Image (cartoon, rainbow, N blue to C red; front, side, top):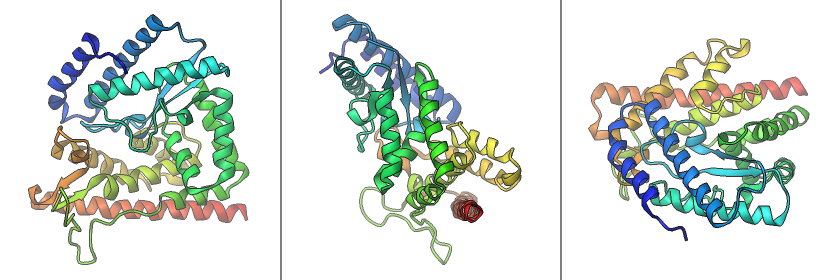
Length: 330
């Protein structure tokens, strides 16, 4: 267990004292998160060097999930991994120990452990470059719901420390595999096609009836997922390397096939990010995903409903692109 002495305490206090002031700017909030995790990484690495040795080889540390997409809320959990050059057991042990210490430090500072264990402390997400290549191929060949889900999670990887080239090479494997096996596009779409509804047939909000969030809708499941999943898949189809939803939308809109079709969704997603900042609390990770309907003004309720409906339209558009790609390959 890591010893939480002054450097970690200082970061935690700085985060706790300043994060509330950043609830009104997604860009400033993301920069704030990046600064914290970079500093935490450097402190933990220095501790590893002090207690053990220098890193035995080159490595890259990357974040995924909302951090990878530069879409973190005020409260954000951990999603990250490690890739390193050497294949020896000694090197593997070193980076796994480092991953465990880093996860523990981030949790202490205010970034809860990932419930799905997508973290550098998990051997699955902390591997040598050659093992990562084998793993990507295995996920593709296995073609199961879980393995394809891991591919989608990995595709949001953004390098924070180290070189970007190793991650880019792994993503190129995904691109080439889809080019060789187009059916993967359909399988990836099927992996994310189910979306929880938040608007009923009579245009009423379908809010939580029980539990800790009565009267709320889950923005993450009902609003963000349709946009994030659809745009990610379109980016994979078009070999777009950007990781944020907004930057992917910009790149997609520049291409002839999607020209103008995706323009409304750019502003829609910016509005969703703002609604989440406007409503969220900072005391609990789950709180950030819920929007209390009764607190919305009439115009805001109308706008939220339209954003949710447009998310469904975007999903149908993405399905039409998938079907067209599949038909062209027949």
